Image (cartoon, rainbow, N blue to C red; front, side, top):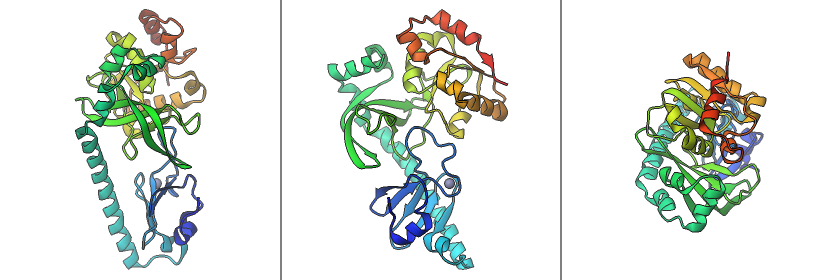
Length: 319
Ligand SMILES: [Zn+2]
Protein backbone atom coordinates (compact mmCIF):
# COMPACT_ATOMS: atom_id res chain seq x y z
CA UNK A 1 0.00 0.00 0.00
CA UNK A 2 1.38 3.42 -1.00
CA UNK A 3 0.55 6.61 0.91
CA UNK A 4 0.20 10.04 -0.72
CA UNK A 5 3.73 11.47 -1.49
CA UNK A 6 4.64 13.46 1.66
CA UNK A 7 3.21 10.85 4.03
CA UNK A 8 4.82 8.06 1.99
CA UNK A 9 8.26 9.62 2.47
CA UNK A 10 7.72 9.94 6.20
CA UNK A 11 5.88 6.71 7.05
CA UNK A 12 5.73 4.55 3.91
CA UNK A 13 8.20 2.09 5.49
CA UNK A 14 5.93 1.16 8.42
CA UNK A 15 4.43 -2.33 8.62
CA UNK A 16 0.69 -3.04 8.32
CA UNK A 17 -0.35 0.15 6.52
CA UNK A 18 -3.96 0.12 5.44
CA UNK A 19 -6.47 2.74 4.40
CA UNK A 20 -9.33 3.29 6.83
CA UNK A 21 -10.87 6.47 5.43
CA UNK A 22 -10.56 8.87 2.51
CA UNK A 23 -7.72 10.80 4.20
CA UNK A 24 -6.86 8.37 6.97
CA UNK A 25 -4.55 5.37 7.16
CA UNK A 26 -3.39 3.20 10.02
CA UNK A 27 -0.30 1.08 10.70
CA UNK A 28 2.12 -0.04 13.41
CA UNK A 29 3.78 2.88 15.25
CA UNK A 30 7.33 4.12 14.51
CA UNK A 31 7.87 4.55 18.26
CA UNK A 32 6.04 1.72 20.07
CA UNK A 33 5.75 -0.63 17.09
CA UNK A 34 3.04 -3.13 17.90
CA UNK A 35 4.05 -4.07 21.44
CA UNK A 36 1.14 -5.28 23.58
CA UNK A 37 -0.94 -5.64 20.47
CA UNK A 38 -4.13 -7.56 21.32
CA UNK A 39 -5.92 -10.07 19.14
CA UNK A 40 -5.41 -11.55 15.74
CA UNK A 41 -6.06 -8.32 13.77
CA UNK A 42 -3.27 -6.04 12.58
CA UNK A 43 -2.10 -3.07 14.67
CA UNK A 44 -4.05 0.11 13.95
CA UNK A 45 -2.83 2.39 16.73
CA UNK A 46 -0.88 4.74 14.46
CA UNK A 47 -3.20 7.01 12.49
CA UNK A 48 -1.85 8.86 9.46
CA UNK A 49 -3.95 11.79 8.23
CA UNK A 50 -3.28 12.83 4.64
CA UNK A 51 -5.53 15.87 4.20
CA UNK A 52 -3.99 19.31 3.61
CA UNK A 53 -1.41 19.06 6.43
CA UNK A 54 -0.17 15.43 6.53
CA UNK A 55 0.42 14.32 10.11
CA UNK A 56 0.30 11.20 12.26
CA UNK A 57 -0.47 10.27 15.82
CA UNK A 58 -0.23 7.11 17.93
CA UNK A 59 -3.17 6.61 20.25
CA UNK A 60 -1.13 4.13 22.31
CA UNK A 61 2.13 6.00 23.04
CA UNK A 62 1.16 9.54 21.99
CA UNK A 63 3.85 9.95 19.32
CA UNK A 64 2.92 12.83 17.02
CA UNK A 65 4.57 14.42 13.99
CA UNK A 66 3.88 16.43 10.87
CA UNK A 67 5.14 14.66 7.76
CA UNK A 68 7.27 17.60 6.63
CA UNK A 69 9.09 17.67 9.99
CA UNK A 70 9.93 13.97 9.64
CA UNK A 71 11.17 14.30 6.07
CA UNK A 72 12.67 17.79 6.07
CA UNK A 73 14.51 19.99 8.52
CA UNK A 74 14.06 19.77 12.30
CA UNK A 75 10.93 21.66 13.38
CA UNK A 76 11.06 25.24 14.70
CA UNK A 77 9.88 26.17 18.21
CA UNK A 78 6.65 27.39 16.69
CA UNK A 79 6.15 24.11 14.87
CA UNK A 80 6.83 22.15 18.08
CA UNK A 81 4.19 24.20 19.93
CA UNK A 82 1.80 23.51 17.09
CA UNK A 83 2.58 19.79 17.38
CA UNK A 84 1.84 19.83 21.09
CA UNK A 85 -1.56 21.44 20.49
CA UNK A 86 -2.40 18.98 17.72
CA UNK A 87 -1.27 16.03 19.84
CA UNK A 88 -3.48 17.18 22.74
CA UNK A 89 -6.40 17.77 20.38
CA UNK A 90 -6.12 14.31 18.80
CA UNK A 91 -5.78 12.64 22.17
CA UNK A 92 -8.88 14.40 23.55
CA UNK A 93 -10.77 13.63 20.37
CA UNK A 94 -9.78 9.97 20.71
CA UNK A 95 -10.94 9.78 24.35
CA UNK A 96 -14.25 11.41 23.36
CA UNK A 97 -14.60 9.13 20.37
CA UNK A 98 -14.12 5.97 22.48
CA UNK A 99 -16.59 7.25 25.08
CA UNK A 100 -19.15 8.10 22.41
CA UNK A 101 -18.71 4.77 20.67
CA UNK A 102 -19.25 2.92 23.95
CA UNK A 103 -22.37 4.99 24.75
CA UNK A 104 -23.67 4.45 21.22
CA UNK A 105 -23.01 0.72 21.47
CA UNK A 106 -24.86 0.62 24.80
CA UNK A 107 -27.85 2.64 23.62
CA UNK A 108 -28.34 0.83 20.36
CA UNK A 109 -30.57 -2.17 20.29
CA UNK A 110 -28.95 -3.87 17.31
CA UNK A 111 -26.71 -6.17 19.32
CA UNK A 112 -29.73 -7.29 21.38
CA UNK A 113 -31.53 -7.86 18.10
CA UNK A 114 -28.76 -10.22 17.01
CA UNK A 115 -29.67 -12.35 20.03
CA UNK A 116 -33.45 -11.89 20.03
CA UNK A 117 -33.83 -12.59 16.30
CA UNK A 118 -31.84 -15.84 16.29
CA UNK A 119 -33.64 -18.58 14.38
CA UNK A 120 -33.03 -22.32 14.40
CA UNK A 121 -30.16 -22.10 11.88
CA UNK A 122 -28.41 -19.41 13.93
CA UNK A 123 -28.78 -21.38 17.16
CA UNK A 124 -27.50 -24.49 15.43
CA UNK A 125 -24.36 -22.56 14.42
CA UNK A 126 -23.72 -21.80 18.10
CA UNK A 127 -24.47 -25.41 19.10
CA UNK A 128 -21.82 -26.49 16.55
CA UNK A 129 -19.40 -24.34 18.57
CA UNK A 130 -20.24 -26.44 21.63
CA UNK A 131 -22.58 -23.87 23.19
CA UNK A 132 -26.12 -25.07 24.00
CA UNK A 133 -29.20 -22.84 23.80
CA UNK A 134 -29.33 -22.24 27.56
CA UNK A 135 -25.84 -20.68 27.49
CA UNK A 136 -26.64 -18.78 24.27
CA UNK A 137 -29.48 -17.12 26.19
CA UNK A 138 -27.55 -16.58 29.41
CA UNK A 139 -24.69 -14.78 27.63
CA UNK A 140 -26.90 -13.03 25.01
CA UNK A 141 -24.93 -14.56 22.15
CA UNK A 142 -26.21 -13.63 18.74
CA UNK A 143 -25.93 -13.97 15.01
CA UNK A 144 -25.44 -11.17 12.47
CA UNK A 145 -26.21 -11.91 8.85
CA UNK A 146 -24.22 -10.44 6.01
CA UNK A 147 -22.31 -7.92 8.14
CA UNK A 148 -19.62 -5.67 6.69
CA UNK A 149 -16.00 -6.00 7.80
CA UNK A 150 -12.66 -4.76 6.52
CA UNK A 151 -9.60 -6.72 5.50
CA UNK A 152 -6.42 -5.88 3.57
CA UNK A 153 -8.26 -6.24 0.31
CA UNK A 154 -11.09 -3.92 1.33
CA UNK A 155 -14.59 -4.33 2.58
CA UNK A 156 -16.31 -7.70 2.57
CA UNK A 157 -19.47 -9.24 3.99
CA UNK A 158 -19.97 -12.37 6.02
CA UNK A 159 -22.30 -13.82 8.62
CA UNK A 160 -20.84 -13.62 12.12
CA UNK A 161 -21.49 -15.06 15.56
CA UNK A 162 -21.74 -12.16 18.01
CA UNK A 163 -20.48 -12.09 21.60
CA UNK A 164 -21.31 -9.06 23.78
CA UNK A 165 -18.66 -8.23 26.41
CA UNK A 166 -20.01 -6.72 29.63
CA UNK A 167 -18.47 -4.82 32.51
CA UNK A 168 -19.08 -5.80 36.11
CA UNK A 169 -22.42 -3.98 36.44
CA UNK A 170 -23.62 -5.41 33.14
CA UNK A 171 -22.84 -2.45 30.90
CA UNK A 172 -21.89 -3.37 27.36
CA UNK A 173 -18.15 -2.77 26.80
CA UNK A 174 -17.57 -4.27 23.35
CA UNK A 175 -18.97 -6.76 20.85
CA UNK A 176 -16.78 -9.50 19.41
CA UNK A 177 -17.50 -11.18 16.09
CA UNK A 178 -16.53 -14.66 14.99
CA UNK A 179 -16.62 -14.50 11.21
CA UNK A 180 -18.34 -17.43 9.50
CA UNK A 181 -16.32 -16.87 6.31
CA UNK A 182 -13.05 -15.24 7.38
CA UNK A 183 -10.79 -13.65 4.72
CA UNK A 184 -7.97 -15.96 5.92
CA UNK A 185 -8.12 -19.02 8.21
CA UNK A 186 -6.33 -17.29 11.11
CA UNK A 187 -8.33 -14.06 10.86
CA UNK A 188 -11.73 -15.05 12.23
CA UNK A 189 -12.19 -12.85 15.31
CA UNK A 190 -12.94 -9.12 15.29
CA UNK A 191 -13.83 -6.65 18.02
CA UNK A 192 -15.85 -3.50 17.42
CA UNK A 193 -13.12 -1.44 15.81
CA UNK A 194 -11.52 1.33 17.85
CA UNK A 195 -12.69 0.04 21.23
CA UNK A 196 -10.32 -1.55 23.78
CA UNK A 197 -10.55 -5.35 24.11
CA UNK A 198 -11.64 -6.08 27.70
CA UNK A 199 -11.71 -9.27 29.78
CA UNK A 200 -14.67 -11.51 29.07
CA UNK A 201 -16.73 -11.78 32.27
CA UNK A 202 -19.06 -14.78 32.51
CA UNK A 203 -21.00 -13.51 35.53
CA UNK A 204 -21.97 -10.18 37.00
CA UNK A 205 -19.70 -10.71 40.00
CA UNK A 206 -16.55 -8.82 41.03
CA UNK A 207 -13.38 -9.93 39.24
CA UNK A 208 -11.78 -11.03 42.51
CA UNK A 209 -10.90 -14.03 44.68
CA UNK A 210 -10.31 -17.52 43.38
CA UNK A 211 -10.26 -17.04 39.63
CA UNK A 212 -10.39 -19.49 36.72
CA UNK A 213 -8.75 -17.86 33.71
CA UNK A 214 -8.97 -19.10 30.11
CA UNK A 215 -8.30 -17.64 26.66
CA UNK A 216 -11.27 -16.23 24.83
CA UNK A 217 -14.99 -15.80 25.43
CA UNK A 218 -16.07 -19.16 24.03
CA UNK A 219 -13.77 -21.12 26.35
CA UNK A 220 -14.85 -18.94 29.26
CA UNK A 221 -18.52 -19.63 28.52
CA UNK A 222 -18.03 -23.40 28.27
CA UNK A 223 -15.76 -23.78 31.31
CA UNK A 224 -18.04 -21.46 33.30
CA UNK A 225 -20.99 -23.69 32.39
CA UNK A 226 -19.26 -26.59 34.16
CA UNK A 227 -17.20 -24.84 36.85
CA UNK A 228 -19.19 -21.75 37.92
CA UNK A 229 -19.86 -22.98 41.48
CA UNK A 230 -16.22 -23.88 42.18
CA UNK A 231 -14.56 -20.48 41.53
CA UNK A 232 -15.37 -16.92 42.57
CA UNK A 233 -15.09 -15.85 38.93
CA UNK A 234 -14.45 -17.42 35.53
CA UNK A 235 -13.02 -14.99 32.99
CA UNK A 236 -11.54 -15.03 29.48
CA UNK A 237 -8.55 -13.10 28.16
CA UNK A 238 -9.37 -11.38 24.85
CA UNK A 239 -6.30 -12.93 23.14
CA UNK A 240 -2.86 -14.36 23.72
CA UNK A 241 -1.28 -10.91 24.08
CA UNK A 242 -3.67 -8.99 26.37
CA UNK A 243 -3.01 -5.31 27.09
CA UNK A 244 -1.70 -4.16 30.46
CA UNK A 245 -5.06 -2.50 31.17
CA UNK A 246 -6.78 -5.82 30.61
CA UNK A 247 -4.38 -7.71 32.91
CA UNK A 248 -4.62 -4.95 35.51
CA UNK A 249 -8.35 -5.69 35.78
CA UNK A 250 -7.35 -9.10 37.29
CA UNK A 251 -5.45 -7.48 40.16
CA UNK A 252 -7.99 -8.41 42.88
CA UNK A 253 -7.93 -12.10 41.92
CA UNK A 254 -5.84 -14.44 44.05
CA UNK A 255 -4.99 -17.12 43.23
CA UNK A 256 -5.52 -17.29 39.48
CA UNK A 257 -5.87 -20.80 38.08
CA UNK A 258 -4.88 -20.35 34.47
CA UNK A 259 -6.25 -23.04 32.14
CA UNK A 260 -4.07 -21.86 29.27
CA UNK A 261 -4.21 -23.38 25.80
CA UNK A 262 -1.42 -25.97 25.37
CA UNK A 263 0.28 -23.83 22.69
CA UNK A 264 0.28 -20.74 24.94
CA UNK A 265 2.10 -22.80 27.61
CA UNK A 266 4.54 -24.15 25.05
CA UNK A 267 5.31 -20.78 23.45
CA UNK A 268 5.62 -18.87 26.70
CA UNK A 269 2.64 -16.50 26.41
CA UNK A 270 1.05 -18.03 29.52
CA UNK A 271 4.25 -17.47 31.50
CA UNK A 272 4.25 -13.86 30.27
CA UNK A 273 0.80 -13.30 31.78
CA UNK A 274 1.84 -14.99 35.05
CA UNK A 275 5.08 -13.04 35.25
CA UNK A 276 3.24 -9.73 34.79
CA UNK A 277 0.57 -10.52 37.42
CA UNK A 278 3.19 -11.60 39.96
CA UNK A 279 5.53 -8.68 39.34
CA UNK A 280 2.93 -5.89 39.08
CA UNK A 281 0.20 -7.11 41.43
CA UNK A 282 1.79 -9.82 43.59
CA UNK A 283 -0.91 -12.25 42.46
CA UNK A 284 -0.26 -15.99 42.56
CA UNK A 285 -0.81 -17.58 39.15
CA UNK A 286 -0.96 -21.35 38.68
CA UNK A 287 -0.63 -22.50 35.08
CA UNK A 288 -2.21 -25.85 34.26
CA UNK A 289 -0.49 -28.04 31.70
CA UNK A 290 -3.53 -29.35 29.84
CA UNK A 291 -3.47 -31.93 27.07
CA UNK A 292 -6.18 -30.05 25.14
CA UNK A 293 -7.89 -26.66 25.16
CA UNK A 294 -10.13 -26.41 28.22
CA UNK A 295 -13.40 -26.18 26.25
CA UNK A 296 -12.42 -29.28 24.21
CA UNK A 297 -11.78 -31.17 27.45
CA UNK A 298 -15.46 -30.72 28.30
CA UNK A 299 -17.02 -30.98 24.84
CA UNK A 300 -14.83 -33.76 23.36
CA UNK A 301 -13.00 -35.52 26.19
CA UNK A 302 -15.83 -36.09 28.68
CA UNK A 303 -14.16 -34.04 31.40
CA UNK A 304 -16.16 -33.71 34.64
CA UNK A 305 -16.17 -30.73 37.03
CA UNK A 306 -14.52 -32.59 39.97
CA UNK A 307 -11.77 -33.94 37.71
CA UNK A 308 -11.17 -30.52 36.17
CA UNK A 309 -10.94 -28.93 39.59
CA UNK A 310 -8.44 -31.58 40.70
CA UNK A 311 -6.43 -30.97 37.55
CA UNK A 312 -6.35 -27.24 38.24
CA UNK A 313 -5.44 -27.67 41.89
CA UNK A 314 -2.28 -29.52 40.85
CA UNK A 315 -1.31 -26.71 38.48
CA UNK A 316 2.17 -25.40 39.06
CA UNK A 317 2.66 -22.09 40.76
CA UNK A 318 4.52 -19.78 38.42
CA UNK A 319 7.65 -18.25 39.93
ZN1 LIG B 1 3.06 4.35 19.45
